[in-house]
Length: 494
Ligand code: AMP
Ligand code: MG
View 1 (cartoon, rainbow, N blue to C red):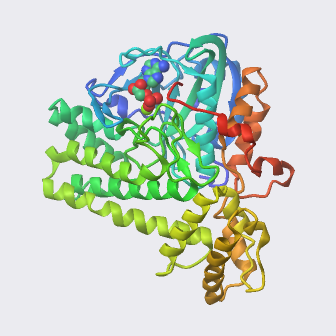
View 2 (tube, protein in one colour; view 1 turned 120 degrees about the vertical axis):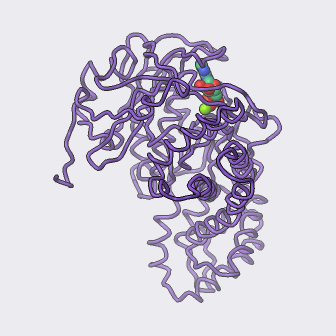
View 3 (cartoon, helix red, strand yellow; view 1 turned 60 degrees about the vertical axis):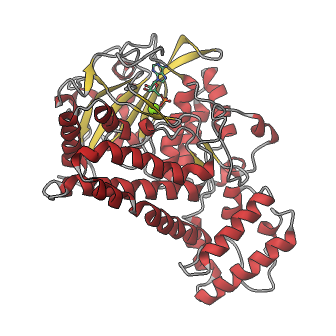
């Protein structure tokens, strides 16, 4: 096999192996999508296509639109809606499930990696409850761009292959147009996929699902005597690390219900998410989250809370002591990973001075309303010699004296390391992104796309896939958000 050039498949020769469809119908409902009408291509992502060895030229075929608008069944696909339940805003909801997304099937690529093809907005399913089974173009663009932005930042996430649009009307707070989004992940199993069987007392199915997930995604645990406990332990660790990544980059998910928590520890389900502009620990990106349950600084605790729900659901498979023991790893894993990330963002080694330095910095950023991303990007060029005031960073603060005092201690720590400012900048340029997906940027791309101009979606996609590069022609995308950005609101409505 040639490693440089994996085989290029057509749509009809994708290598499907539908392991989830082989589970009994206790786990899913088989059905075909209900198509959106008169589909057109909004955006196509080459780098996700490469994950399933799909020839990018295939996106230009009419058949591409037919398959990914739900009009035709992809050869080899066995479409189904997955069953799950979940805790939503703290309350258990007995049955959720894919209400508007359909798992077309799983493609195994030439490297043996498995990718779910999950078509969101593909019509009603038995789990739709009061919903219409549709996704609007606006939220599809938001999810599409953020999947790829997170991946570009090096944060585990679902991926996205394409958006197909339609002029079909969908009713939300206002009339909007429909779209389908083809989302990809090694698995779409969620914490809530386990909870549904625990609360229904279906312990056989619970065990089958655990065995299935372990076989597929944690194969090194298959032979372990306490494999379920070890499985939980790994989910705990992965989730803790994911929360650390979110906090370090300034990402707020917005709807951390257990049905939106991936069993693989990847970011899943982008609704009313937001990246911090100015640093604010209490930032609530979801307009519908009146209590601030999912505020930015609550995310690590909510991650732990959600893991407790998962652990409880898995108790039929392990002792309470084992479950407790697995959960006890959360805090230390989170803190260790978060401090690693913050050390790297500051360009320093881990040391006892680090945590107080980070805490003081976050307080300063908060008090001075400093833009989180711009601060760190400018910090990359920080000069550690005592005489340098570092005006580019300093000017971001109203309270310059407070900054100077922090910067003095920071500079002292940098000088101790012995590394040159230039060498440190090279490392920090790969840690502190220049571009993030600010809401106002998505909004501009959405408004153009609603007028059938998709160029801004494609431009943002390309920019955010390499957010650490300079892209000097696109400087304005790295600038402060305009004043009107503060008035944008996003809600669960999607
Ligand atoms: P979400 O908040 O988007 O994660 O959705 C929570 C649950 O509601 C999931 O089971 C979704 O499938 C379902 N859902 C959300 N929007 C719709 C819709 N328009 N039609 C049907 N089901 C939906
Ligand atoms: Mg969801």
